[in-house]
Image (tube, rainbow, N blue to C red):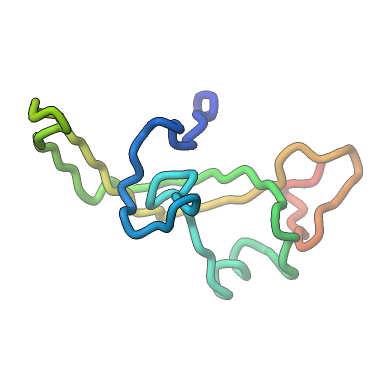
Length: 116
C-alpha cells in the first residue's frame, strides 16, 4: 500500500511557472499533474457513464521513470538554485471513488471490484 497522500497544491507565495496565465488564473497545481482519459481509457476502466464534475476518485497507478534531470539556475538574487525533474509514464491505472457513504454508488461507476 502506498504511503499517505501528499497534498500537491502550490504554496501561495510560490511563483507560478506558467507566465502566460492571466492574473488570478494561475494554476493551483503544478503542470503535469492533470490526467486526461480518452474514450478507450474510460472503457478499459469500466466507466460506462461519465461522473459528475467535481466527483472525487482515488487513483492508483504504476509508472515507469522515462527521464531524469538536474541542473542549477540563477535564483532571483543571483545565487544558484538546484532544479530536479523526473518524468513518469503511467503504464497501469485504477480508479476508485473516494470515501462514499455505505451503499451509495457514484454515477458512472460500475466495477464490482470496488464495491463495498
